[in-house]
Length: 612
Ligand code: F6R
Image (cartoon, rainbow, N blue to C red; front, side):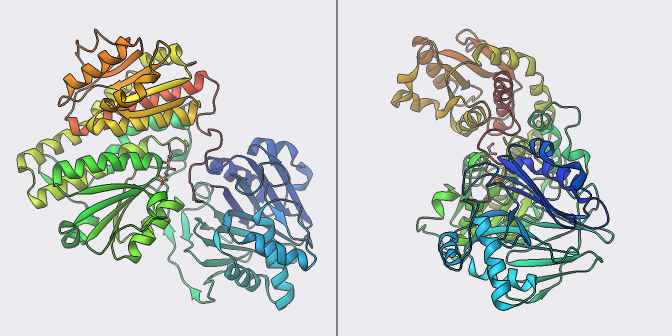
Protein backbone atom coordinates (compact mmCIF):
# COMPACT_ATOMS: atom_id res chain seq x y z
CA UNK A 1 0.00 0.00 0.00
CA UNK A 2 1.36 3.33 -1.11
CA UNK A 3 4.24 3.37 -3.50
CA UNK A 4 7.40 5.32 -2.81
CA UNK A 5 10.26 6.28 -5.12
CA UNK A 6 13.41 8.26 -4.53
CA UNK A 7 16.36 9.20 -6.71
CA UNK A 8 19.74 10.86 -6.18
CA UNK A 9 22.42 11.02 -8.85
CA UNK A 10 23.25 12.90 -12.02
CA UNK A 11 20.10 12.30 -14.04
CA UNK A 12 16.91 14.34 -13.82
CA UNK A 13 14.96 12.90 -10.93
CA UNK A 14 11.46 13.91 -12.01
CA UNK A 15 11.03 11.61 -15.06
CA UNK A 16 12.52 8.68 -13.13
CA UNK A 17 10.15 9.30 -10.23
CA UNK A 18 7.06 9.73 -12.42
CA UNK A 19 7.80 6.56 -14.38
CA UNK A 20 8.46 4.71 -11.13
CA UNK A 21 5.23 5.95 -9.57
CA UNK A 22 3.28 4.71 -12.58
CA UNK A 23 4.80 1.28 -12.08
CA UNK A 24 3.92 1.40 -8.40
CA UNK A 25 0.40 2.68 -8.90
CA UNK A 26 -0.95 -0.81 -8.27
CA UNK A 27 -0.04 -0.16 -4.62
CA UNK A 28 -2.42 2.77 -4.29
CA UNK A 29 -3.81 5.48 -6.51
CA UNK A 30 -5.75 7.92 -4.34
CA UNK A 31 -3.27 10.74 -4.80
CA UNK A 32 0.29 11.31 -5.94
CA UNK A 33 3.08 13.78 -5.30
CA UNK A 34 6.76 14.60 -5.76
CA UNK A 35 9.29 16.76 -3.95
CA UNK A 36 12.44 17.96 -5.70
CA UNK A 37 15.37 20.06 -4.55
CA UNK A 38 15.70 22.62 -7.25
CA UNK A 39 17.69 23.77 -5.12
CA UNK A 40 14.68 25.26 -3.34
CA UNK A 41 12.08 22.70 -2.20
CA UNK A 42 9.54 22.18 -5.00
CA UNK A 43 6.46 20.10 -4.25
CA UNK A 44 3.69 19.05 -6.62
CA UNK A 45 0.83 16.95 -5.34
CA UNK A 46 -2.63 16.08 -6.48
CA UNK A 47 -5.56 13.87 -5.58
CA UNK A 48 -6.04 11.18 -8.22
CA UNK A 49 -3.57 9.30 -10.35
CA UNK A 50 -0.01 10.01 -11.41
CA UNK A 51 -1.32 11.41 -14.73
CA UNK A 52 -3.26 14.01 -12.75
CA UNK A 53 -0.08 14.93 -10.91
CA UNK A 54 1.77 15.38 -14.20
CA UNK A 55 -0.82 17.99 -15.23
CA UNK A 56 -0.03 20.20 -12.23
CA UNK A 57 3.77 19.83 -12.30
CA UNK A 58 5.47 23.01 -13.51
CA UNK A 59 7.89 21.85 -16.26
CA UNK A 60 10.25 24.73 -15.53
CA UNK A 61 10.90 23.29 -12.08
CA UNK A 62 11.59 19.66 -12.78
CA UNK A 63 15.28 19.57 -13.60
CA UNK A 64 16.50 18.56 -10.10
CA UNK A 65 18.77 15.56 -9.72
CA UNK A 66 17.39 14.58 -6.32
CA UNK A 67 13.78 13.93 -5.41
CA UNK A 68 11.12 11.73 -3.87
CA UNK A 69 7.66 10.67 -5.03
CA UNK A 70 4.62 8.93 -3.64
CA UNK A 71 1.41 7.31 -4.79
CA UNK A 72 -1.06 6.97 -1.96
CA UNK A 73 -3.60 4.49 -0.64
CA UNK A 74 -5.35 6.60 1.97
CA UNK A 75 -5.27 5.54 5.62
CA UNK A 76 -5.31 8.76 7.70
CA UNK A 77 -7.36 11.47 6.07
CA UNK A 78 -9.34 11.59 2.85
CA UNK A 79 -7.62 11.26 -0.48
CA UNK A 80 -7.40 14.99 -1.31
CA UNK A 81 -4.57 17.33 -2.39
CA UNK A 82 -3.88 18.37 1.19
CA UNK A 83 -3.32 14.86 2.46
CA UNK A 84 -1.23 13.79 -0.54
CA UNK A 85 2.46 13.13 0.13
CA UNK A 86 5.19 14.44 0.29
CA UNK A 87 4.63 16.29 3.56
CA UNK A 88 6.77 19.15 4.75
CA UNK A 89 8.05 19.86 8.23
CA UNK A 90 7.04 23.19 9.78
CA UNK A 91 10.36 24.82 8.84
CA UNK A 92 9.81 23.76 5.23
CA UNK A 93 13.25 22.15 5.22
CA UNK A 94 12.32 18.47 5.36
CA UNK A 95 10.00 16.59 3.01
CA UNK A 96 8.92 13.03 3.66
CA UNK A 97 7.10 10.24 1.84
CA UNK A 98 5.70 7.38 3.88
CA UNK A 99 4.11 3.98 3.34
CA UNK A 100 2.48 2.49 6.45
CA UNK A 101 0.75 3.69 9.59
CA UNK A 102 2.15 5.46 12.65
CA UNK A 103 -0.13 4.07 15.35
CA UNK A 104 0.84 6.50 18.14
CA UNK A 105 0.64 9.56 15.91
CA UNK A 106 -2.16 11.15 17.97
CA UNK A 107 -0.13 11.39 21.18
CA UNK A 108 2.96 12.59 19.30
CA UNK A 109 0.87 15.19 17.50
CA UNK A 110 -0.56 16.46 20.79
CA UNK A 111 2.94 16.83 22.20
CA UNK A 112 4.17 18.64 19.07
CA UNK A 113 1.19 21.02 19.11
CA UNK A 114 2.08 21.90 22.71
CA UNK A 115 5.54 22.78 21.44
CA UNK A 116 4.09 25.12 18.83
CA UNK A 117 3.88 22.89 15.75
CA UNK A 118 0.95 23.24 13.37
CA UNK A 119 -0.43 20.71 10.92
CA UNK A 120 -1.85 21.26 7.47
CA UNK A 121 -3.03 17.72 6.78
CA UNK A 122 -4.86 14.95 8.64
CA UNK A 123 -2.04 12.48 8.11
CA UNK A 124 0.18 10.57 10.51
CA UNK A 125 3.01 11.26 8.04
CA UNK A 126 3.07 14.99 8.70
CA UNK A 127 3.36 14.16 12.39
CA UNK A 128 6.39 11.99 11.69
CA UNK A 129 8.28 14.58 9.65
CA UNK A 130 7.73 17.16 12.38
CA UNK A 131 8.83 14.72 15.04
CA UNK A 132 12.07 14.24 13.09
CA UNK A 133 12.50 18.01 12.87
CA UNK A 134 11.84 18.43 16.58
CA UNK A 135 14.35 15.70 17.50
CA UNK A 136 16.97 17.23 15.24
CA UNK A 137 16.51 20.63 16.87
CA UNK A 138 16.37 19.32 20.42
CA UNK A 139 19.32 16.96 20.11
CA UNK A 140 21.27 19.28 17.79
CA UNK A 141 22.25 16.26 15.73
CA UNK A 142 22.58 15.13 12.11
CA UNK A 143 19.41 14.40 10.20
CA UNK A 144 20.09 10.68 9.92
CA UNK A 145 20.56 10.42 13.66
CA UNK A 146 17.38 12.43 14.22
CA UNK A 147 15.52 10.04 11.90
CA UNK A 148 16.85 7.11 13.89
CA UNK A 149 15.87 8.60 17.26
CA UNK A 150 12.42 9.64 16.02
CA UNK A 151 11.73 6.19 14.57
CA UNK A 152 12.55 4.67 17.92
CA UNK A 153 9.70 6.73 19.36
CA UNK A 154 7.04 5.67 16.89
CA UNK A 155 4.86 2.57 16.98
CA UNK A 156 3.63 1.17 13.69
CA UNK A 157 4.79 0.32 10.22
CA UNK A 158 6.67 2.48 7.80
CA UNK A 159 8.88 2.83 4.83
CA UNK A 160 10.01 6.43 4.54
CA UNK A 161 12.32 8.59 2.50
CA UNK A 162 13.40 12.03 3.73
CA UNK A 163 14.64 14.92 1.62
CA UNK A 164 16.53 17.74 3.34
CA UNK A 165 16.92 21.23 1.86
CA UNK A 166 20.09 21.73 3.93
CA UNK A 167 21.73 18.70 2.35
CA UNK A 168 20.87 18.35 -1.35
CA UNK A 169 23.46 15.59 -1.69
CA UNK A 170 21.78 13.05 0.56
CA UNK A 171 18.62 10.97 0.89
CA UNK A 172 17.66 9.06 4.02
CA UNK A 173 15.43 5.99 3.87
CA UNK A 174 14.16 3.65 6.59
CA UNK A 175 11.79 0.75 6.97
CA UNK A 176 9.85 -1.30 9.45
CA UNK A 177 7.06 -3.56 8.24
CA UNK A 178 6.82 -1.95 4.78
CA UNK A 179 9.16 -2.94 1.97
CA UNK A 180 12.01 -0.84 0.62
CA UNK A 181 14.53 -1.69 -2.08
CA UNK A 182 17.67 0.31 -2.84
CA UNK A 183 18.93 0.30 -6.42
CA UNK A 184 22.67 0.77 -6.56
CA UNK A 185 23.77 2.48 -9.77
CA UNK A 186 26.95 4.18 -10.95
CA UNK A 187 27.15 7.13 -8.51
CA UNK A 188 23.38 7.15 -8.28
CA UNK A 189 20.78 5.54 -6.05
CA UNK A 190 17.15 4.59 -6.51
CA UNK A 191 14.78 3.81 -3.68
CA UNK A 192 11.41 2.15 -4.19
CA UNK A 193 8.71 0.04 -2.59
CA UNK A 194 9.52 -2.72 -5.04
CA UNK A 195 12.09 -3.18 -7.75
CA UNK A 196 9.85 -2.28 -10.71
CA UNK A 197 10.88 1.42 -10.83
CA UNK A 198 14.54 0.40 -10.57
CA UNK A 199 14.93 -2.46 -13.07
CA UNK A 200 15.27 -0.12 -16.05
CA UNK A 201 18.42 1.47 -14.58
CA UNK A 202 20.19 -1.20 -12.57
CA UNK A 203 19.85 -4.86 -11.60
CA UNK A 204 21.91 -4.36 -8.43
CA UNK A 205 19.73 -4.00 -5.39
CA UNK A 206 19.84 -4.15 -1.63
CA UNK A 207 16.73 -5.07 0.33
CA UNK A 208 16.60 -3.11 3.56
CA UNK A 209 15.64 -5.20 6.56
CA UNK A 210 13.12 -4.17 9.16
CA UNK A 211 14.34 -1.54 11.61
CA UNK A 212 17.13 -0.40 9.33
CA UNK A 213 17.86 2.93 7.71
CA UNK A 214 20.10 3.92 4.84
CA UNK A 215 21.98 7.12 4.11
CA UNK A 216 22.60 7.57 0.36
CA UNK A 217 25.09 10.17 -0.81
CA UNK A 218 25.47 11.77 -4.19
CA UNK A 219 29.16 10.77 -4.34
CA UNK A 220 28.06 7.10 -4.56
CA UNK A 221 28.80 6.20 -0.94
CA UNK A 222 26.12 4.78 1.29
CA UNK A 223 25.70 3.27 4.71
CA UNK A 224 23.07 1.11 6.37
CA UNK A 225 22.49 0.98 10.12
CA UNK A 226 19.93 -0.55 12.41
CA UNK A 227 17.67 1.73 14.41
CA UNK A 228 19.80 0.62 17.35
CA UNK A 229 22.74 2.39 15.60
CA UNK A 230 24.65 -0.74 14.56
CA UNK A 231 26.39 -0.64 11.18
CA UNK A 232 25.13 -3.32 8.72
CA UNK A 233 26.59 -4.62 5.49
CA UNK A 234 24.20 -6.11 2.97
CA UNK A 235 25.11 -8.21 0.01
CA UNK A 236 24.11 -6.62 -3.30
CA UNK A 237 21.57 -8.88 -4.99
CA UNK A 238 20.79 -9.23 -8.71
CA UNK A 239 17.23 -8.66 -9.87
CA UNK A 240 15.88 -11.69 -11.65
CA UNK A 241 13.13 -10.16 -13.73
CA UNK A 242 13.26 -8.02 -16.84
CA UNK A 243 11.56 -4.84 -17.96
CA UNK A 244 9.30 -6.70 -20.41
CA UNK A 245 7.89 -8.71 -17.55
CA UNK A 246 6.41 -5.60 -15.98
CA UNK A 247 5.00 -4.15 -19.18
CA UNK A 248 1.69 -4.99 -20.85
CA UNK A 249 3.19 -6.73 -23.88
CA UNK A 250 0.34 -5.92 -26.29
CA UNK A 251 -2.49 -6.68 -23.87
CA UNK A 252 -4.93 -3.96 -22.99
CA UNK A 253 -4.70 -4.62 -19.27
CA UNK A 254 -2.29 -6.29 -16.91
CA UNK A 255 -5.06 -8.51 -15.60
CA UNK A 256 -5.75 -9.96 -19.05
CA UNK A 257 -2.04 -10.42 -19.71
CA UNK A 258 -1.68 -12.20 -16.39
CA UNK A 259 -4.67 -14.47 -17.08
CA UNK A 260 -3.01 -15.44 -20.36
CA UNK A 261 0.36 -15.90 -18.67
CA UNK A 262 -0.95 -18.68 -16.45
CA UNK A 263 0.25 -21.64 -18.53
CA UNK A 264 3.79 -20.26 -18.57
CA UNK A 265 3.65 -19.15 -14.93
CA UNK A 266 2.67 -22.67 -13.87
CA UNK A 267 5.46 -24.18 -15.96
CA UNK A 268 7.90 -21.80 -14.29
CA UNK A 269 6.59 -22.72 -10.87
CA UNK A 270 7.07 -26.44 -11.54
CA UNK A 271 10.40 -26.22 -13.36
CA UNK A 272 13.20 -28.10 -11.62
CA UNK A 273 10.85 -29.27 -8.89
CA UNK A 274 9.36 -32.35 -10.51
CA UNK A 275 9.72 -34.72 -13.41
CA UNK A 276 6.85 -37.04 -14.21
CA UNK A 277 8.63 -39.51 -16.45
CA UNK A 278 11.53 -39.86 -14.03
CA UNK A 279 9.06 -39.83 -11.16
CA UNK A 280 10.67 -37.32 -8.83
CA UNK A 281 9.55 -34.29 -6.82
CA UNK A 282 12.10 -32.00 -5.19
CA UNK A 283 10.79 -29.14 -3.09
CA UNK A 284 14.01 -27.75 -1.61
CA UNK A 285 12.34 -26.12 1.38
CA UNK A 286 10.65 -29.38 2.37
CA UNK A 287 13.87 -31.38 2.28
CA UNK A 288 15.63 -28.99 4.61
CA UNK A 289 13.11 -29.47 7.40
CA UNK A 290 11.78 -32.85 6.35
CA UNK A 291 11.80 -34.48 9.83
CA UNK A 292 9.86 -31.69 11.42
CA UNK A 293 7.45 -31.40 8.53
CA UNK A 294 6.79 -35.12 8.20
CA UNK A 295 6.19 -35.54 11.90
CA UNK A 296 3.98 -32.43 12.21
CA UNK A 297 0.74 -32.90 14.14
CA UNK A 298 -1.04 -30.63 11.72
CA UNK A 299 -0.59 -27.86 9.19
CA UNK A 300 -2.06 -24.43 9.66
CA UNK A 301 -2.40 -22.44 6.47
CA UNK A 302 -2.65 -18.71 6.96
CA UNK A 303 -3.23 -16.07 4.29
CA UNK A 304 -5.61 -13.34 3.12
CA UNK A 305 -7.92 -12.89 0.14
CA UNK A 306 -7.10 -14.88 -2.95
CA UNK A 307 -4.13 -16.49 -1.21
CA UNK A 308 -6.53 -17.70 1.48
CA UNK A 309 -8.60 -19.32 -1.26
CA UNK A 310 -5.57 -21.20 -2.55
CA UNK A 311 -4.99 -22.19 1.08
CA UNK A 312 -8.47 -23.77 1.13
CA UNK A 313 -7.55 -25.78 -1.94
CA UNK A 314 -4.33 -26.67 -0.12
CA UNK A 315 -6.34 -28.04 2.78
CA UNK A 316 -8.18 -30.30 0.42
CA UNK A 317 -5.00 -31.47 -1.33
CA UNK A 318 -2.85 -32.02 1.75
CA UNK A 319 -5.57 -33.88 3.64
CA UNK A 320 -6.58 -35.95 0.63
CA UNK A 321 -3.08 -36.88 -0.50
CA UNK A 322 -0.83 -36.70 2.57
CA UNK A 323 -3.45 -37.36 5.27
CA UNK A 324 -2.15 -34.55 7.48
CA UNK A 325 -4.85 -32.52 9.27
CA UNK A 326 -4.97 -28.95 7.97
CA UNK A 327 -6.63 -25.82 9.29
CA UNK A 328 -6.96 -22.73 7.15
CA UNK A 329 -7.02 -19.41 8.94
CA UNK A 330 -7.58 -15.83 7.87
CA UNK A 331 -4.32 -14.25 9.01
CA UNK A 332 -6.22 -11.22 10.31
CA UNK A 333 -8.27 -13.41 12.67
CA UNK A 334 -5.51 -15.80 13.63
CA UNK A 335 -3.20 -13.05 14.85
CA UNK A 336 -5.76 -11.52 17.18
CA UNK A 337 -6.95 -14.58 18.99
CA UNK A 338 -4.91 -16.82 21.17
CA UNK A 339 -4.44 -19.76 18.80
CA UNK A 340 -3.36 -23.12 20.13
CA UNK A 341 -0.12 -23.68 18.33
CA UNK A 342 3.24 -25.15 19.27
CA UNK A 343 6.48 -26.60 17.97
CA UNK A 344 4.72 -29.64 16.48
CA UNK A 345 2.77 -27.44 14.07
CA UNK A 346 3.80 -26.35 10.61
CA UNK A 347 2.43 -23.04 9.38
CA UNK A 348 2.15 -22.51 5.64
CA UNK A 349 1.98 -18.78 4.96
CA UNK A 350 0.77 -17.96 1.45
CA UNK A 351 1.23 -14.51 -0.03
CA UNK A 352 1.77 -13.17 -3.53
CA UNK A 353 3.40 -9.94 -2.37
CA UNK A 354 5.06 -11.42 0.68
CA UNK A 355 4.27 -8.12 2.41
CA UNK A 356 0.70 -8.53 3.65
CA UNK A 357 0.77 -7.10 7.16
CA UNK A 358 -1.77 -9.52 8.64
CA UNK A 359 -0.02 -12.58 7.22
CA UNK A 360 3.33 -11.32 8.44
CA UNK A 361 1.96 -10.72 11.92
CA UNK A 362 0.34 -14.18 11.97
CA UNK A 363 3.63 -15.86 11.20
CA UNK A 364 5.48 -13.80 13.79
CA UNK A 365 2.97 -15.06 16.35
CA UNK A 366 3.38 -18.66 15.19
CA UNK A 367 7.16 -18.29 15.30
CA UNK A 368 7.03 -17.04 18.87
CA UNK A 369 5.22 -20.27 19.69
CA UNK A 370 7.93 -22.33 18.01
CA UNK A 371 5.99 -23.49 14.96
CA UNK A 372 7.91 -24.04 11.73
CA UNK A 373 7.02 -21.45 9.12
CA UNK A 374 6.93 -22.43 5.46
CA UNK A 375 6.41 -19.42 3.19
CA UNK A 376 4.86 -19.62 -0.26
CA UNK A 377 5.50 -16.20 -1.80
CA UNK A 378 5.84 -14.76 -5.26
CA UNK A 379 7.99 -11.72 -4.58
CA UNK A 380 11.60 -12.71 -4.08
CA UNK A 381 13.22 -11.26 -0.99
CA UNK A 382 9.86 -10.15 0.41
CA UNK A 383 9.29 -9.80 4.14
CA UNK A 384 7.28 -13.03 4.50
CA UNK A 385 9.84 -14.98 2.47
CA UNK A 386 12.55 -13.68 4.76
CA UNK A 387 10.61 -14.26 7.94
CA UNK A 388 9.96 -17.92 7.05
CA UNK A 389 12.21 -20.80 8.12
CA UNK A 390 11.80 -22.48 4.75
CA UNK A 391 9.66 -22.05 1.70
CA UNK A 392 9.09 -22.05 -2.02
CA UNK A 393 8.77 -19.15 -4.40
CA UNK A 394 5.90 -19.45 -6.84
CA UNK A 395 7.87 -17.88 -9.73
CA UNK A 396 4.74 -16.42 -11.32
CA UNK A 397 6.71 -13.31 -12.35
CA UNK A 398 5.56 -9.82 -11.39
CA UNK A 399 1.79 -9.60 -10.92
CA UNK A 400 0.71 -6.01 -11.50
CA UNK A 401 -3.09 -6.23 -11.90
CA UNK A 402 -4.59 -5.67 -8.47
CA UNK A 403 -6.88 -8.68 -8.92
CA UNK A 404 -4.73 -11.73 -8.39
CA UNK A 405 -4.80 -14.34 -11.17
CA UNK A 406 -1.53 -16.07 -12.02
CA UNK A 407 -0.41 -15.81 -8.41
CA UNK A 408 -3.41 -17.94 -7.44
CA UNK A 409 -2.73 -20.67 -9.99
CA UNK A 410 0.97 -20.87 -9.17
CA UNK A 411 0.19 -21.04 -5.45
CA UNK A 412 -2.13 -23.95 -6.16
CA UNK A 413 0.49 -25.73 -8.25
CA UNK A 414 3.13 -25.30 -5.53
CA UNK A 415 0.78 -26.61 -2.85
CA UNK A 416 -0.04 -29.56 -5.10
CA UNK A 417 3.66 -30.41 -5.29
CA UNK A 418 4.02 -30.04 -1.52
CA UNK A 419 1.05 -32.36 -0.96
CA UNK A 420 2.46 -34.88 -3.44
CA UNK A 421 5.93 -34.86 -1.96
CA UNK A 422 4.51 -35.35 1.54
CA UNK A 423 2.24 -38.13 0.28
CA UNK A 424 5.16 -39.85 -1.38
CA UNK A 425 7.32 -39.64 1.74
CA UNK A 426 4.53 -40.75 4.06
CA UNK A 427 3.33 -43.46 1.69
CA UNK A 428 -0.25 -42.28 2.06
CA UNK A 429 -1.08 -42.89 -1.59
CA UNK A 430 0.38 -45.50 -3.97
CA UNK A 431 3.45 -44.50 -5.98
CA UNK A 432 1.42 -45.08 -9.14
CA UNK A 433 -1.08 -42.40 -8.05
CA UNK A 434 1.76 -39.94 -7.33
CA UNK A 435 3.13 -40.62 -10.80
CA UNK A 436 -0.30 -40.24 -12.42
CA UNK A 437 -0.82 -36.85 -10.75
CA UNK A 438 2.67 -35.70 -11.73
CA UNK A 439 1.91 -36.50 -15.37
CA UNK A 440 -1.36 -34.65 -15.12
CA UNK A 441 0.33 -31.66 -13.47
CA UNK A 442 3.04 -31.62 -16.12
CA UNK A 443 0.37 -31.42 -18.82
CA UNK A 444 -1.87 -28.91 -17.05
CA UNK A 445 -0.41 -25.86 -18.82
CA UNK A 446 -1.49 -27.26 -22.21
CA UNK A 447 -5.00 -27.74 -20.87
CA UNK A 448 -5.06 -24.19 -19.50
CA UNK A 449 -3.99 -22.95 -22.94
CA UNK A 450 -6.97 -24.83 -24.37
CA UNK A 451 -9.20 -23.33 -21.68
CA UNK A 452 -8.11 -19.82 -22.68
CA UNK A 453 -9.91 -20.39 -26.00
CA UNK A 454 -13.26 -19.94 -24.24
CA UNK A 455 -12.53 -16.21 -24.00
CA UNK A 456 -14.86 -15.10 -26.82
CA UNK A 457 -17.68 -17.24 -25.52
CA UNK A 458 -17.24 -15.94 -21.96
CA UNK A 459 -17.33 -12.41 -23.37
CA UNK A 460 -20.75 -13.11 -24.89
CA UNK A 461 -22.03 -14.35 -21.54
CA UNK A 462 -20.55 -11.28 -19.87
CA UNK A 463 -22.49 -9.03 -22.25
CA UNK A 464 -25.77 -10.69 -21.19
CA UNK A 465 -25.19 -10.38 -17.42
CA UNK A 466 -23.07 -7.25 -17.13
CA UNK A 467 -25.93 -5.32 -15.53
CA UNK A 468 -26.83 -7.93 -12.92
CA UNK A 469 -26.83 -6.69 -9.33
CA UNK A 470 -25.86 -10.00 -7.77
CA UNK A 471 -24.12 -13.21 -8.75
CA UNK A 472 -23.94 -16.53 -6.96
CA UNK A 473 -21.03 -18.93 -7.48
CA UNK A 474 -21.46 -22.54 -6.44
CA UNK A 475 -18.97 -25.39 -6.31
CA UNK A 476 -18.32 -28.55 -4.33
CA UNK A 477 -15.21 -30.09 -2.81
CA UNK A 478 -12.04 -28.69 -4.28
CA UNK A 479 -14.13 -26.41 -6.49
CA UNK A 480 -15.81 -24.68 -3.56
CA UNK A 481 -12.76 -22.39 -3.03
CA UNK A 482 -12.86 -21.74 -6.78
CA UNK A 483 -16.44 -20.49 -6.34
CA UNK A 484 -15.20 -18.15 -3.59
CA UNK A 485 -12.37 -16.95 -5.79
CA UNK A 486 -14.66 -16.42 -8.81
CA UNK A 487 -17.00 -14.33 -6.65
CA UNK A 488 -14.09 -12.31 -5.23
CA UNK A 489 -12.77 -11.57 -8.73
CA UNK A 490 -16.17 -10.31 -9.86
CA UNK A 491 -16.86 -8.11 -6.86
CA UNK A 492 -13.43 -6.55 -6.63
CA UNK A 493 -13.19 -5.39 -10.24
CA UNK A 494 -16.82 -4.96 -11.41
CA UNK A 495 -18.37 -3.91 -8.05
CA UNK A 496 -21.21 -6.39 -8.54
CA UNK A 497 -22.15 -8.13 -5.34
CA UNK A 498 -21.19 -11.79 -5.60
CA UNK A 499 -21.07 -14.68 -3.18
CA UNK A 500 -19.41 -18.05 -3.36
CA UNK A 501 -21.00 -21.00 -1.60
CA UNK A 502 -20.59 -24.74 -1.37
CA UNK A 503 -23.32 -25.87 -3.77
CA UNK A 504 -25.07 -28.00 -1.16
CA UNK A 505 -25.26 -25.09 1.29
CA UNK A 506 -27.45 -23.15 -1.13
CA UNK A 507 -30.58 -24.73 0.29
CA UNK A 508 -29.68 -23.45 3.77
CA UNK A 509 -30.20 -19.81 2.85
CA UNK A 510 -28.95 -18.42 -0.45
CA UNK A 511 -31.68 -20.24 -2.39
CA UNK A 512 -34.03 -17.52 -1.14
CA UNK A 513 -32.18 -15.07 -3.38
CA UNK A 514 -32.86 -16.99 -6.57
CA UNK A 515 -35.26 -15.58 -9.11
CA UNK A 516 -35.14 -14.88 -12.84
CA UNK A 517 -32.66 -12.04 -12.27
CA UNK A 518 -30.04 -14.07 -10.47
CA UNK A 519 -27.14 -15.47 -12.51
CA UNK A 520 -25.71 -18.56 -10.83
CA UNK A 521 -22.29 -19.82 -11.89
CA UNK A 522 -21.88 -23.55 -11.28
CA UNK A 523 -18.54 -25.31 -11.19
CA UNK A 524 -19.79 -28.63 -12.42
CA UNK A 525 -16.68 -30.57 -13.32
CA UNK A 526 -16.39 -32.76 -10.21
CA UNK A 527 -16.88 -36.38 -11.19
CA UNK A 528 -17.20 -37.44 -7.55
CA UNK A 529 -20.24 -35.26 -6.89
CA UNK A 530 -21.63 -34.94 -10.38
CA UNK A 531 -25.15 -36.19 -9.62
CA UNK A 532 -25.34 -33.96 -6.58
CA UNK A 533 -24.34 -30.94 -8.65
CA UNK A 534 -26.96 -31.83 -11.23
CA UNK A 535 -29.55 -31.76 -8.41
CA UNK A 536 -28.31 -28.33 -7.31
CA UNK A 537 -28.58 -27.10 -10.90
CA UNK A 538 -32.16 -28.43 -11.02
CA UNK A 539 -32.99 -26.57 -7.81
CA UNK A 540 -31.83 -23.29 -9.32
CA UNK A 541 -33.61 -23.97 -12.59
CA UNK A 542 -36.87 -24.69 -10.77
CA UNK A 543 -36.65 -21.17 -9.32
CA UNK A 544 -35.90 -19.60 -12.70
CA UNK A 545 -32.31 -18.64 -11.84
CA UNK A 546 -30.01 -18.15 -14.83
CA UNK A 547 -27.48 -20.97 -14.98
CA UNK A 548 -23.94 -20.54 -16.27
CA UNK A 549 -22.17 -23.88 -15.88
CA UNK A 550 -18.49 -24.70 -16.23
CA UNK A 551 -18.49 -28.32 -17.41
CA UNK A 552 -16.18 -30.88 -18.95
CA UNK A 553 -16.06 -31.09 -22.73
CA UNK A 554 -18.84 -33.31 -24.00
CA UNK A 555 -21.09 -32.96 -20.93
CA UNK A 556 -24.64 -33.32 -22.26
CA UNK A 557 -26.64 -33.62 -19.07
CA UNK A 558 -25.93 -30.19 -17.58
CA UNK A 559 -25.98 -28.69 -21.09
CA UNK A 560 -29.65 -29.61 -21.27
CA UNK A 561 -30.38 -27.72 -18.04
CA UNK A 562 -28.10 -24.70 -18.18
CA UNK A 563 -28.69 -21.37 -19.91
CA UNK A 564 -25.01 -21.22 -20.83
CA UNK A 565 -22.23 -23.74 -20.64
CA UNK A 566 -18.51 -23.16 -20.72
CA UNK A 567 -16.67 -26.33 -21.71
CA UNK A 568 -13.22 -26.92 -20.27
CA UNK A 569 -10.77 -29.81 -20.75
CA UNK A 570 -11.00 -32.70 -18.33
CA UNK A 571 -8.28 -33.29 -15.75
CA UNK A 572 -7.93 -35.15 -12.47
CA UNK A 573 -10.57 -33.74 -10.16
CA UNK A 574 -8.12 -32.55 -7.53
CA UNK A 575 -6.23 -30.51 -10.11
CA UNK A 576 -9.38 -29.07 -11.64
CA UNK A 577 -9.21 -25.65 -9.86
CA UNK A 578 -6.25 -24.81 -12.08
CA UNK A 579 -8.61 -25.03 -15.03
CA UNK A 580 -12.01 -24.04 -13.69
CA UNK A 581 -10.75 -20.71 -12.32
CA UNK A 582 -9.77 -19.49 -15.79
CA UNK A 583 -13.28 -18.82 -17.22
CA UNK A 584 -14.27 -17.18 -13.93
CA UNK A 585 -11.32 -14.78 -14.13
CA UNK A 586 -12.34 -14.00 -17.72
CA UNK A 587 -15.98 -13.49 -16.81
CA UNK A 588 -15.04 -10.97 -14.11
CA UNK A 589 -12.63 -9.24 -16.49
CA UNK A 590 -15.11 -8.82 -19.35
CA UNK A 591 -17.99 -7.74 -17.12
CA UNK A 592 -15.77 -5.13 -15.46
CA UNK A 593 -14.60 -3.77 -18.82
CA UNK A 594 -18.20 -3.61 -20.10
CA UNK A 595 -19.20 -1.68 -16.99
CA UNK A 596 -16.41 0.81 -17.62
CA UNK A 597 -14.40 -0.17 -14.54
CA UNK A 598 -10.66 0.13 -14.18
CA UNK A 599 -9.77 -3.55 -13.90
CA UNK A 600 -6.12 -3.08 -13.08
CA UNK A 601 -6.75 -0.50 -10.39
CA UNK A 602 -10.16 -1.14 -8.85
CA UNK A 603 -11.50 1.48 -6.47
CA UNK A 604 -10.45 1.39 -2.81
CA UNK A 605 -8.04 -1.50 -3.33
CA UNK A 606 -4.28 -1.81 -3.43
CA UNK A 607 -2.12 -4.69 -4.45
CA UNK A 608 0.02 -5.03 -1.42
CA UNK A 609 -1.83 -4.63 1.85
CA UNK A 610 0.88 -3.53 4.23
CA UNK A 611 -1.52 -2.09 6.81
CA UNK A 612 -3.78 -4.04 9.14
C1 F6R B 1 -7.63 -10.44 -4.69
C2 F6R B 1 -6.38 -10.04 -4.10
C3 F6R B 1 -6.27 -9.95 -2.61
C4 F6R B 1 -4.96 -10.58 -2.16
C5 F6R B 1 -4.76 -10.40 -0.66
C6 F6R B 1 -3.51 -11.09 -0.16
O1 F6R B 1 -7.56 -10.50 -6.07
O2 F6R B 1 -5.42 -9.79 -4.79
O3 F6R B 1 -7.35 -10.54 -2.00
O4 F6R B 1 -4.99 -11.95 -2.48
O5 F6R B 1 -4.68 -9.03 -0.38
O6 F6R B 1 -2.38 -10.60 -0.79
P1 F6R B 1 -1.03 -11.40 -0.81
O7 F6R B 1 -1.23 -12.65 -1.55
O8 F6R B 1 -0.05 -10.48 -1.45
O9 F6R B 1 -0.69 -11.67 0.64
